[in-house]
Image 1 (cartoon, rainbow, N blue to C red):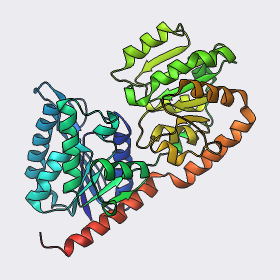
Image 2: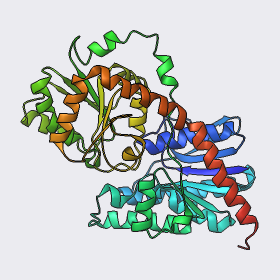
Image 3: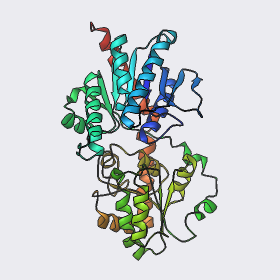
Image 4: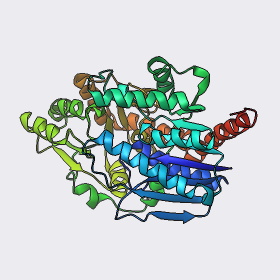
Length: 397
């Protein structure tokens, strides 16, 4: 089987969970014997072509001059479409086209109709969800329409949680029988890479010995709820003086969060690192007393799985996918979204009950290792591929 994957993000151009998902999925699909061509956006610093066995990556230069993001996406899709059409015969055609989110939906739909090849869509998040139902701006409305069209044109649609399945049924009008739920996975090998490394010096860069360290990571946008964590911090500091809060990631709300910390007088206890490497992110999981993910909207939440794999106690909002793979009091702790009071109380409990919480973290680690692997995600995805390819054989286009 030969599959064309279209994605806006792919290693090393990873902005969020989608980039991680597509990178790991493609690698593991190739390991299972599926020939994969990934066509994605590239830049001048990144090799435009890579080949590794059955995995082929082709990057289309991202130079755009339209000005606004939506127009830039359309221009990039046009270049991607021309690139794929130029090489389609050379590559030998494909059994299936797999598009990830609306950002490459335009090229995916065009190729579907040009070559009469079935289209599969994975929806990682929606504009309506990110905007919490507020589609007031013209761009948000156009993105929502693009998401609807992608799911309409797709043979089947994959989502990462039951929350997302219900969301697509309600807000995009998809029938339940068209949707497959395949949870995300993680690569837990990072734990073994650092098990013999002394992380004391690394931890000291963020918190002195004897001081609690709380870690959170993600895109710094409103829906990730980092402002709720900052609002909860003073109450935690009252009971655990000196606690350091490390918030890592880039995004449009970074300056606003810094100002919030200053206004609350906790600027010396809250560190905004901006972008951090994968290695430092993993070290922070392993060095922290707790990881907090206070999202207001979260289709899944790979970062929470990573923290659980590191046996770091997790406190997260009871929303979306987080509420599906975290069992409160058993593998982590769930709090209402947007509630800094309950968040602070739960964080205090975690920091004050190390022995009991350690048992919760240990169970979380076991669950992640058993249920959330990229090999398992790839195996389930192959089943969807096979179903679509077999159904296509029975249909006159």
